[in-house]
Image (cartoon, rainbow, N blue to C red; front, side):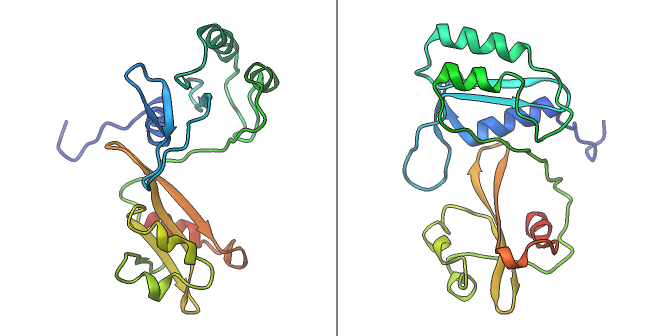
Length: 197
């Protein structure tokens, strides 16, 4: 294999990168906290189920979930069908919520952004040195996080930041992107530009 060729990760590998970036783990691969770069440690969820388009799943449990409950949840996970629509809830969603006595959940797709991707619209890097110039008119809240969420890339229109992408969960193998576009500027391709940046 030449130096230019890369081994491409499988969808399962990418899901492993994803869960490792989202949460801290103990030596038993049990979830501990949400892996955010700024100070403070919020507890991780009790259960994570990441399904891939390959038909595999990555399952994690928080350190304090009892073994008997883990066994029940793992049995249900083994019966999950291959996903065809990214917006479909798991087959056993209601059973997971009942067993965990869950009140809320999150779900959504996860994407790989290729390293060679380049923005098609000019973007700017936001740092502590230039943040007062760019973080106004909707993104002032980011000033308290700017040192932790780097790199931070913005698209500026009408002398203000309208779309921003920053690293919000970081590991040695992956960065999870936090992406926000002001509502009145959505649907113009700005999010793609800042992600590529």
